[in-house]
Image (spheres, rainbow, N blue to C red):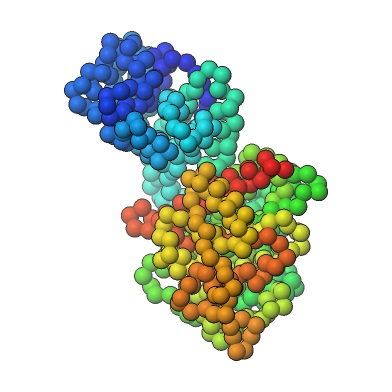
Length: 494
């Protein structure tokens, strides 16, 4: 599918379908008004007749308007003009994409002209692209009968004369983020018998080949040599080989310390000996969505050739019950030398992450952000709308939250107070891997914080946002938009 930035009067465009807006008070958007004037007020006629009342996100497809070169015009309701803001713009864009006629091969959007106080032209353009590709995403990888292919070939986004260059920059950014989101979704949606640690390693190597990243994929012997006893302990119950994946994007200044992204890559989580219940266990294929978001983010920054130094670290394995698996009460020694009493083998994500966070020290990072589907407690706390941000550096937390707001991939700052640390006390090791039910997401973050003393660090718990359940089951690709926006802003500040 080819995206482009164009300008020009709508009545002169030969697209199969043009998308324009109508407000609730029967006021037409600027482009809708031009089409209306050219077509002898055909749009006004349907609005007056009540076929399109302008209610938010309603749509009406019109055919063969007089004196209009486009074959169809899709009217989309904008709601009340004085209430039209960011939320309404995003909803309108999604409704318009869903209502596009299947027969259309070339379409044109006249939506970026809509006035939204809180959004720049760049933001409106990038979001339109991201929403388009998100809404038209199909899960086809392992179906013998594929979903009907989208016939659309060309998508034009129309802007005013003089705005083309600004919009083209936004188009590149929007496409890059959308491609990163799609990769994260694809990886998350694959089953655990396909998307194994070995498979993730191959995906990383392909990214390195495509974008010139430096890549290492370490096997069990190399991981054991590093002293990653916690990570190895989780992996030892599975016959599936473990991997430690390291990607490096080195496009910043030589003296610039890198930003490290660490993604939890549990390709299937049974809970181990502390076995989960069978209901919805299939969704534990999504326990590698932190890893998927790191790979998706690297695809996006590779597409943009972002001038920044970034490192991606992915500890990946299965968590399985077997005669070799960790048992509750076992004690493991982490790469940092700290010992951990494993009271619950289903709290495995923090065990693989803690060794990866210690490994991150070798890159002398400016900042480390780990991303993990870490706790069910986070879902109870925040639901499925916001990811959780944990950091003792308030400025870093604010930076991530601001990036999430800008990307419409929201996150919320949770407490990381020392008051919670005592819940991890153990009689037999330096710490336990769980701190009880109370504040479970917080104590998980407290656990990780013990391995991050040598750099600025934040933890993103995405257990509630990385995928959807029920009829709409599937990966969301979050928090790729947040992470990419964070890196774009960091690159701009250097």
